[in-house]
Length: 284
Image 1 (cartoon, rainbow, N blue to C red):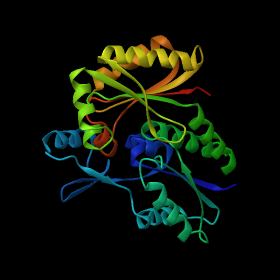
Image 2: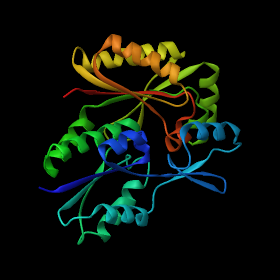
Image 3: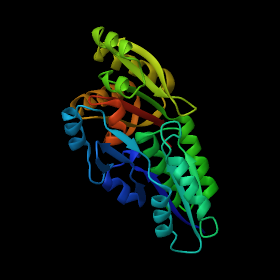
Image 4: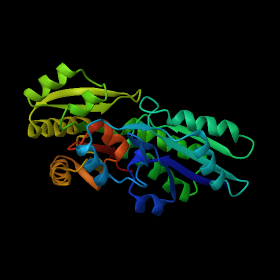
């Protein structure tokens, strides 16, 4: 039986204790405030990041890990001849992280088997896949079985997120300045998702936060009906609103397990503070 190791990256928004519990290795992306560089979730946590973001005149930038950083992690984990590494990462539409991982794999092909998975997702959508892969590995499932589980979760998980302000989408070049100004004046709250190609896609635009949340609940009811589900609510410095959202989701759906996660610095750069997101996947 293979010695299977699970790797993901910091955009999975897995809390450190959860990653440690499941034996998941996290490779950090980077956040740059001017000349200062921070490792996402290592030397810059969510609370400090959003404080710095509020004080910064310019939007920070982000970058992926280098192939060398991936190689260092892969070599560390390849401690037995039968090691197989399953490396799951942020959508290639959002980041070059997959490219770095793939290059590292090509340089280590004679030393260890590495399976690279484009999650076509991010945040806890990616985190859910990493946890499921780690659980399946502990149960003694094969590499092929684990990859199929991951693909099934990717197909079946639904994500909706609500951006509190259009300012950061505009600063990041996602929408034009005129659209951002108009949206702010009209109090529009975009409801977004990540589509099958791994791209951010609009779902709806609703005036007011409460109506936007109600619309998300309506969409989830349509997708899941009376099926039993697992839920994660993610947020950026908006815990109280996240709790309210989970309460509404729990009233509308049959929730088996639930958790919260804070949006990390890399994703927070593009979404901004006050963002709410909900990941829902069928319970197994």
